[in-house]
Image (cartoon, rainbow, N blue to C red):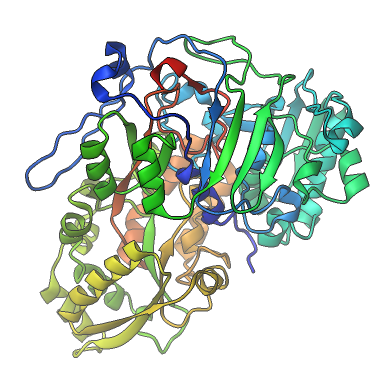
Length: 601
């Protein structure tokens, strides 16, 4: 399938649909005055644009309280319990039971300094990463990671679990870490191996001593390994030796904040507090407190958005993420007591096969014509009520990644012209490319209504310059087969993983899942080779290399990017120390920091 790829976004997107349930909220007028201090958004509706302007406030001063159950929601059933046996990405339920070697720094998010909001998926930067099961880590040179394993971390002990009794709550050591990392790299069904078949042969895991584990790999394997391996679970070897794997939920024995005690397929999963959890609250009014605050979690499976929204309005669930501007408008009108956080969505784009000489897209003039035939400003108004950004591809202007991003107004005039609607110039470019009457083409897309709406608008716009676009809508399994194999006929619309792997330049180089336009370019390859020298050891240099390359990349118009729409994460006022986080790095590791104010229910 791929050679130097990271992961598929679908599993990560599950975290954006987390919901929590309990009692109905009190009426808005019953809120305590101090509750207003934790609202992270200020809404100002303009008559025409209805654009939401965000105002981030300082974290509230409330002292955390213990107790209560958090009922998290997934929009699909749990897909597995063991990343060593799961080739399709990330299993967010696993991170409730298992900690990982490294994690995003909670204290630098909205709970602390506010340098990064942890709302958008896959925000994993080494400069915002701290040790978790690894007390610390170091990268002495590109291709080498040294993990210094934390002492005093014990596996959970559930007396009702045969697997847990087998491990008996013993302390985790470097032996467990080395065993698990090797398993994640070597297992035929591990996503690391499936998406990067060269990683097993290029990577070694060794123990310097009982508490130090060293991972070495080839330079081009280094970034994918860093992004994924550090956030894979650590299993006790005796569990794998006895059961072979952890595909049965009853065999989970982790070292995380919760233990799984029940699972009803397609309905719910139940987790209880791990009484022997090691971590303390790192920041805020509860700094130094033993975690987690919650007694437990119930993960609900709710597949229908309308049902999710209704449950949120009535207080049956406590948080719901990844909502659109229209959802925001409805919820703020009908349920003003809800809190929310605004952030930009993952990048979307139309890919075009440029490896086929018989297709028009081989010619840059054709690609640039399609850009100029797209009225981005009109799309933003028509689809997103003005609540979107024109340039959010391939990297959006988000906290933590500003220095790798170049705003449109700083781009050369040749690039700015591509984002300005100019159908006359588009026709001229098509004539110069040998298509005076335009051409017919087709685009494959999934069944997501928002995607179909967007492409329907594109179809009408391109028709004005003679391009006859037909939509080929396919079911989910077929769609993801097209995205992973890249074996579509002409055009493909879909999402791309960012910002975590931005340094890999995935859409513009290599034989990987995300190079869906089949781009091969010497300048991109040269920049990538420079990035390899600095990645993860001098990220400021990597940011600059990425930023400097973007004007050239956008002028080539290898993709037709969609505007970056803003999304919203909503939650109930009784869910405290939550600020709209989605994933802390690549996992929903905010759950042990939050607490429930029972008095507000």
